[in-house]
Structure formats: C-alpha cells, structure tokens
Length: 640
Picture: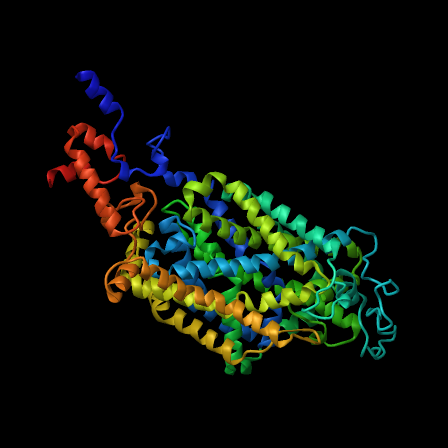
C-alpha cells in the first residue's frame, strides 16, 4: 500500500481535461508550454528589432520630401505634435498588448473575441505589403550589384537602352558660370537606366499587359527572399541577432553620407531649402495631415510587427522606456537623413544649374533615379553608390523581418500544437508562396502592380484597423482594466496623458486622417500613366477587404455563442477565460483562477467539474502535486 502511495506521489495525476497537449506523453510537466514559443535572448534584441522595424526606407525617401514641401523647418512643429498625440501612445498600446499576453496579432484577440477580425485584417495588410516591399529590396540588390564596377552603368548615355532624349545632366554650366543649358524635354541617363533597363517598362502596354518576366529581377527577388528566410529561420533567436548589424550599420553609412554631403559645394543651398521655416504653411490642414501620416506609417503602428516583437519579451520588460527610445530615435533619424539627402541634392542643384525643387523627389524616384545620378558627380562614385544602396538594403531587411515574423507568429499561435514544432518548414512555405505571388512584380509592367499595392494595401484599411483596436481596448475591454494590466507588468499605471490619447485624441486624429484620405482621394498614377478604372476598382476592393474582415470576424464570434443576440454580443465581447499572462507565475489578482487552454465559460466549467471529481479520489498530497501550477485543487476539495 505504501509503495502504491509513493508511486502515486511521484507521478501526479492531472485530470485529463486540464491537460494540454504539451502535458501529455513523455513531456516534462515542469516545462511551461509558453516556453516552446521562444523569447529574445537579450533585452537589446527587442530594442534593436523595433528600431530596425521603424527606421526604414520611408525615413530616407519620404520624410525629407514631405518636410520641404510642407514648410521646411516649420513642418517639425506638427510632426512632433502628432508624434505626441498619435505616435507614442499607439506605439505603447501595441507593445503593451503583445507583452502582456505573449500572443501574436490573431491570438491576442482573446482580449475580446468579437474583434478578432481586426487581427485577420492586420495579417492581410502585412501580407500584401511584404510581397511588394521585398520587390523594392530586390531593386536595391540589383543596384548594389551594378555598383560593383569601375564606372557606374547609369553615368553616360550611348547604351542600347538610351534614347535620343538622353542627356548627361552634369556640368551643364560653362567655366564662366554662364546660364544653364536648356534641359527641357531631356532625360538623364540614370532615369533611362531605371525605366528602360532595370524595369524595361517600354515592353509593357500597362497594368493589364505586364509583359515578360525580367529574369535578372526575378533572381534578385529570389535572393531577397532567401536572405529573409535565413534570417528568420529560428524566429526571434536568429533575427534578434541579425539586427545587431542591420539596425546599427545604417547609422554608420548615414553618418558617412552626411559628412560627405555637407562638405560638397552647394550643400548648404540644399540644407537651407530643406529646413527654411515657412510658418504660414501651418495654417493649412494639409500640413497637419501630412505630419500625422508620416508618423503613422513611419512607426509601423497597426501592421502587427510591434505587437509580435513585444510578445517575445519577458513579462516585466520596460517597454515604457523602450517606447520613447524608439519613437524619438526614429524622428531624429528622419531629420538626419534629410540633412544627408538634401546636402547632396544641393550640390546636384549647383552642378546642374537648376533649383533644388527640380531635382528633389519622393519615393523610388529619389532612391533609383536622383540619388544615383548625384553619385555619378562624386569622386569614387561606385564606392558611394555601393554604400548608399547597402544602407537601403539593411534598412529594408529589418522591416521585412518584422512583416514575416508577424505572419508566422500569428498563425503558429493559432495552431501551436501543429505548427510550432514545424515553424521552420512553415516559414519556408510562407516565403515560397510570397515569392510566387510577387513574380508579377518582376515583369516589364511590374512597377504598375507595385504602385497599385503601395497605394491601396495599407491605406484606409490600416487606419480602420488601428481605430478598431484602439476603441476595442479602451471602450470594450475597458481603459481601467487595461491600465491595471500594465500596472501588473511595469509596476505603475499609465498617466493622464496616455489615457487621454487612447480614449479621445488618437482615435479622433486617425478618424480625421481616414476622412481626409477619402475626401482627397486621387486615382493612382505612375509618371504619365493613368491606371484604368478596373485597376482602381481592384485597389479599392483590396483596401475594403481588410475592413470587411472586421465585421466578418464579429459575425463568426457571435455565431459561436449561445443565447439571444444581445447575450451573444456580450459573451463575445468579454475576454476569453484564458486571457492574461502566458506564464502562470505572472498571473496575479483576477488572473490567478483562470485556466490555460480554456476558450469560453462552458469548457471552463467542464474542466472544473472534472478536476473536482478527480480531487475526491486523490490523497491531499497527491491533489496538491497534481495541480502543476494550475487551479488549486485543494481549494476545490474544501468547497465540495
């Protein structure tokens, strides 16, 4: 009898319905299932990953252009004000959701299953963005390899891809400083290299007839996906180490380009054009909208990347401090990038004898036309060209890591017992699928599809997702409950500033952005090409689909409940029974009595009844041991 009791004590008996798949079989009962998910190997991994995710291509080719077209130095006033109203609060909200629950963008909606469609919308948006974003990285790789020559191929006319309009736009002033040559109706060799050689866009008649695949671009895209896959091979344990290089090295290159730029003749002309304050612009609503849009997209709020990264943190990581480091660091990086860019554009303006605003562009035109042309005017031009495109490569890869990690994490958190052990294979399949979907972007008309994706995949749909998230957390889940959760993590509750932004200021600003984007809607275009109506309709449907996933998710959540419609809505709005910190040693207060793995009150009651029945047949000592950090069985026996 004693032997049987000793054996019983050595091997605790856990009620079957209280067991998770990780508890069954020959698995160590002391190992918490959440440990299988993985964590950052150090606090700096998370911080650098967030910096790399937020500091991207937009800091180089979008912020400087928006600054000089919206009041120069005066643009910094609405920029930092919008950073305070929208950027910092929403950044902190998304990090808090991920760290508190240790869940990805889909599973985190245990906080309120009624809004799980917002998580699905996030995945759709980030999936579409990841497809075309890696194509931009492929273009960067193309130029990076092209820079490995003694003479840059876009430096001179006379190549097979050049036309009679090609004119080498350099040295257009004579030695006596005469008037510049007439550059009207001429094209620079860098622009023809981009459009006629890299894209070979003359082979396409438009978005409806993309033409043949450009195999050099196809191979560059394949290389880009291989690099991304190898870097996320082991999840955050591998990407968290890669960012030590990809998140820091761009700053070294940016500093080198900045020093080289400000020492060029005419550099001050460009910097003055970039920062000269024109405060009358502040009276225009457009400037404030532009500032909010820049903050919104630059910080990557709503894509799920921040939530995903935070979900791999330890429970008490100081994300409050990290929020200010990343958001302010991102803003300062954008300003420094503007100095580096406009100092070179000022030099270019002086060389060409044209105003700065005639050489300044935003978007891919700056990265693949204007700046490469400026590099040809410098001594050791291939060296500076290589540095510039290597900087763009590292800036782009960080963001792409976040996009892919967001997708993989979200799906594996939904099906952990099946996909988490096969995460490497699943990540590879995602990369292969996205590469195949992106092949249309490597065709001669691929740029038209890229522009369509860029204009609509993360436009008004992303704003709707962020507004929904903000309202669901603060209004449905409750601002007081959310602040109490943050207090459990960080040891203090957010102050009046954060609560006011979450409740009123941030949603109102985003709603104004949404209305503005609808009222000021303009059809997509690329150069002189205007997209046909069916392409515009396709783009609008692309944006609407992410919005429609939210009510679709609500319908599914309501149908899963029982009772009247109002009762179903109430039940679907409440947090799931297993909502809370993933590790049970972090569960305090109201989260102590929740069961891991339960999905609704009904399964919870089944688990409790099974557990109490099992407790009747066990000795008190065995009952205590059998709990394995779950509900106190001993407490249950007292209430029987």
